[in-house]
Image (cartoon, rainbow, N blue to C red; front, side, top):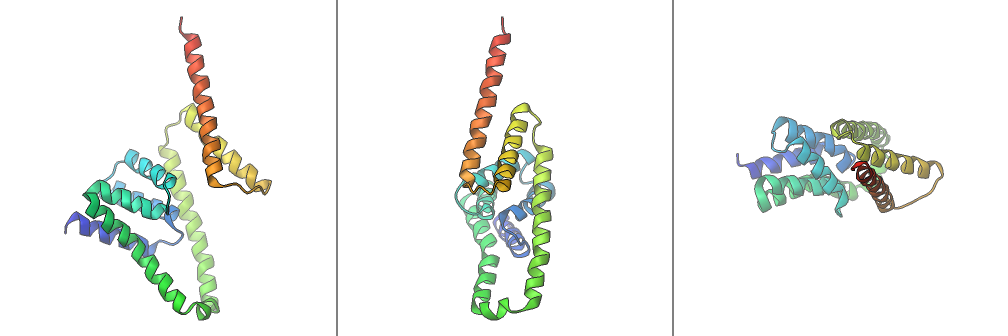
Length: 190
């Protein structure tokens, strides 16, 4: 099987059996492409997650496009992107045909509650894996701590900000830490 077909079926499978969007897929993507197929290194995978989060669009689609392009160029990117979108499109289309009847089923409500627990676990496990792989430098720790403090503080205070604000705030804090480190290095030199 060509790599383009393999990419298509792999992303189709991931798209079909993952609930909760791109963040829930991150753990599956890492397992599939870093650990099993070894098509992407851990460092490349972390870069891919950062790029997928910072570019417009869903993380799942951005990740599929990135990995597909890295492995098989334009054909791989197209195949991966279409494959990850097809299952969701099909499910949403079918649900839209029977939406009112679908919402009345108690089994559906119970299933969604169970799925929410699984999504939380998948997102948490992916975050912990990436945290373990992160270089433990002062700069990274300050950025991580600042982002976590800002998110928790805003949640507690019921302040609603765009995620872009958190990114800009974190970047400014990281730049400040970096500048202070550079100044200290400059002072220590004779």
